[in-house]
Length: 361
Length: 205
Image (tube, each protein chain N blue to C red):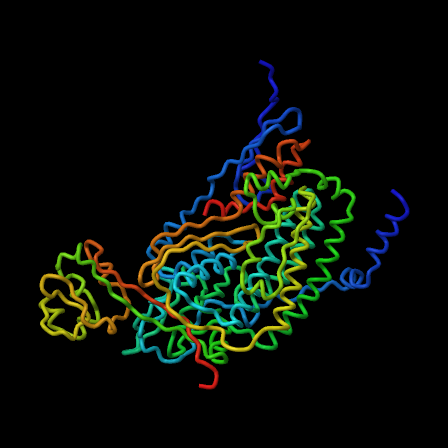
């Protein structure tokens, strides 16, 4: 039998460019990757089991701690699931403020994902620039909610704190600075010749393959699949949201689509601050019994919660489906095989923005 | 290497804000902003030891209301290593004993507050009528001292007691949600639900 595999190269679980532990096993011929496999299971927390039997005010904080980067969306989707179970309506002002917090969180998550990619292709300067402007989004999140990461901003029937005129003014001025800087770094990324050599045409996944393996989020939208859970959300509909789609499907497109979504989020935040309705921020209502499934759009794709609660709103069963698991599989199955060097394996893997903490919970 | 890239490089370097940052680099002093939701601290107001902060706390053992050296004075103690700075204890405290960041200020301006309800459920299939829960309950002991000393009670004023061979709840509204009964129950048939409702006073009231 002819030997086709030269050597099987493992990357990780501890690797300088991986934010979280995960092993990518590549079978190579020379440096060309023939097939890849991703091995998970290094940081299982069992957080869904801890949630069982607890009321919303405890599960809310556990849900935020599923993922350290996209914590607001976990709070958002969990609380909206509980609201759907117990028919709690949200005042319009609270709905807008929720979206404001969520979009700020999306900005910082996309910026750290792009930092991670730039760091992987050894463009550390651009990476550090992006981390620098991410601080602006984090500061705004802190101004709005009181904390940078685990904000605990969204509660059943509304939000916790109401920003006054001064806060909204500060958000507007800071978001303007954020936009000029993002446009500048986006231009650097777009026009950099060496960045193009490392990114364009590498790790290509077609829209048929995306549909086959159910990839979600920016990974799917970069291949021309217009799929965004925000399109069905009532507040986003009011804001006139339409997903950003690119057609290339390579590393470059996946990073560029995140830049474009940052700009889209900035535009949305501006729209929210200008048209913020006045009124109450909490409508009241106790959480009750029910069983339902609800999904929202996390920065990485579709996030789905299935919850069963008892008469007094305690969680009886919960299961969380996070976006990264599909994206990691898409990465191992379609993106990595065929890349021409081992250096492209890591950058392709990082371009799909895998979040292991979400995946293993 | 062509001329246009040289020009692009020079144009990038000759930006006013870049030169300003390069020549007069200044780092802002590291200060905690006033809106940061820090660990709760005592404001000096009198604590009525209603224990609501302990009941709402999502982190086990992060806040405790304890007796101080002075007679009759109770105060909450926050254990820094356990506290997750969620600020729920600050929001629920009716006497404004603790504060953190802008939580009080925001609550005062927008009239937001939180309200607790406690519900006790007894599973009749597993309750064997041992009465440990009703003897352990600290509120029961206050209402009926006989229950604390002898372990039997005949009054219906207590939260719950064993009636006709099964634990029966009489006054759910007196429950303070401490979950002592739930912890003491040998076969988990008593469950206390802490139902929290975030509310806001409508404008103009």
